[in-house]
Length: 183
Image 1: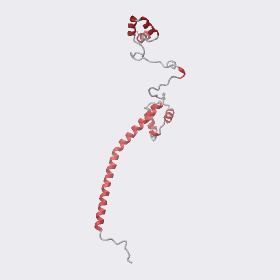
Image 2: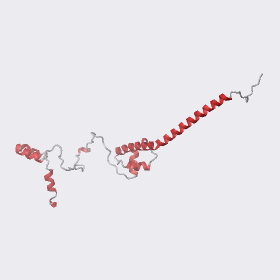
Image 3: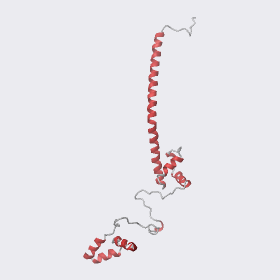
Image 4: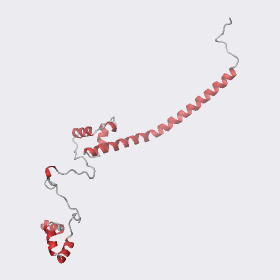
């Protein structure tokens, strides 16, 4: 039997050197590509951080609004809890945060069209809320004093009924009566 020497090399060293050179060339190409990609990732990293922070703040702002807190408190919450992701934050945690930091909490905002009627049938004025008229805005369902004056000439009975029902806007006259000492 012939014994095979594992350390005996054949004379095809030229073919091996071509293969080795091709492998080295591919390694260098992939190394350069990897370095270029790393540079691109480092260039985009600040944008990623900014985008993620913006998305987190937007999500937290929504949670804070739903909880009845001022959205400006999101910055405080983020500064005190930087490790918490927006997905982990619940309404209960936000309210607990507000209580711990003695932040003012208002009633949660209701979506439009879902107004809750006052409890016990009490009206808004019974609960301490008095509507405020700003500027020359006319109250809905009322007619102006000028239109009422014209109606007095045309149909005095209807004009009197509107006045007795409180459907005539007399805010200009009432405003003059309010501050007699300022004249």
